[in-house]
Amino acid sequence: MGGRGLALVALDQVGKTYAGRGGAWEAVRSFTLDLQEGEFFCLLGTSGCGKTTLLNMLAGFERPTAGRILLDGASVSGPGADRGVVFQGHDSLFDWLTALDNIGFGLRLRGMGRRERREKAGHFLKLVGLSGQEGKHPSELSGGMKQRIQIARALAADPRILLMDEPFGALDALTRATLQGELSRIWKETGKTVFFITHDIEEACALATRIGVMTRGPGGTLKAVIPVDPPFPRDRTSDGFMAVFRQVHALIHAELAA
Ligand SMILES: Nc1ncnc2c1ncn2[C@@H]1O[C@H](COP(=O)(O)OP(=O)(O)OP(=O)(O)O)[C@@H](O)[C@H]1O
Ligand SMILES: [Mg+2]
Image (cartoon, rainbow, N blue to C red; front, top):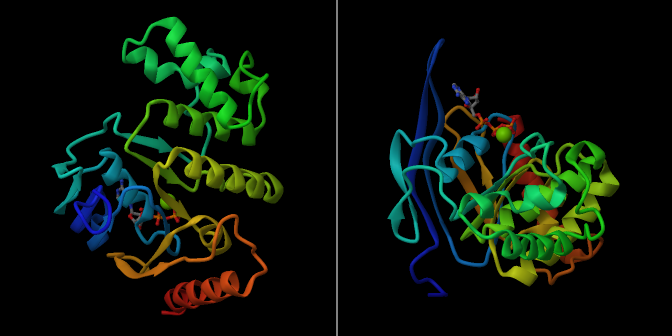
C-alpha cells in the first residue's frame, strides 16, 4: 500500500452529538483525517475537546452521529480484534490472572492452545521489559508495570492499530519518561500503527511522526496537523525538538485563550 495509497484509517467528516440528560451536546464536529500504516499519530487538545470521544468511535465503542470511519476500507461498526485499546487506568486487567495470563487472555478467547498462547504472551512480556514478572498478579505490580501489561496484551492480539488514551497520564514523571522510550522502541520494532491521545505536548513531540491539534469544544475538530521530523530517539533539548514544541504550544494556547 504505502505512500498516499489507501489509508489504514479514514475519518471522514466524523461528528458526535450526545443526547445527554441536559440536552444534546456536540462533542466532535466534522473531523477528517487519514492515518497511514506505520505512523505514530498523537492527538492533542484541551480538556473536553472530544479526544476520548474520537478514540471511542475508532474503537467501535461509540457510533458517530455524522460522517463515517473506515478501517482498511471497511466501515467500523463495533469493537474488533483489529484494534487494540489501552486506557489511562489499569483497572482493565483481571486480578485473578497472572501477568502472563492477562497478556494471553484475548488469545485464549480466540481459541489458541495453551502452549502457543504462553509462548506468544511470553514474547510480548519480554518485549515490554517484564521478564521474570510473569507469575505476578496485577495487585502485586506497580502502576507502570500494569501499563506495560496492558500494552503487551493489546499487542499480543496483533491488531492493525493500537489506540491509546493517555496511557501514561497516571504515572510519575520518571516512569512516564521510561515508558515513552519503551513505547517508541516497541513501535519501531513492531511497525504498528499507533493513535495516541495525550495532554502532554512534550510527550507528543517525543513520540509522534505527526501531531494533530484539536480546537476546543463544543464541537471539537482538527485544527492543524504538524509533521514531526527529528530522528528517533529524540533529543528533547535539540533545536528541532524545541521548534516543534513551540509550534504545538502556540496552537494549544491559542485554544485555551479563545
Ligand atoms: N456519554 C456522554 N454523554 C454526554 N456527553 C458526553 C459523553 N461523553 C463525553 N461527553 C462530553 O463530550 C465532550 C468531549 O468529551 P471527551 O471525553 O471526548 O473529551 P476529552 O477531549 O477526552 O477530554 P479530556 O482531555 O479531559 O479527557 C465533553 O464536553 C463531555 O462532557
Ligand atoms: Mg479524554
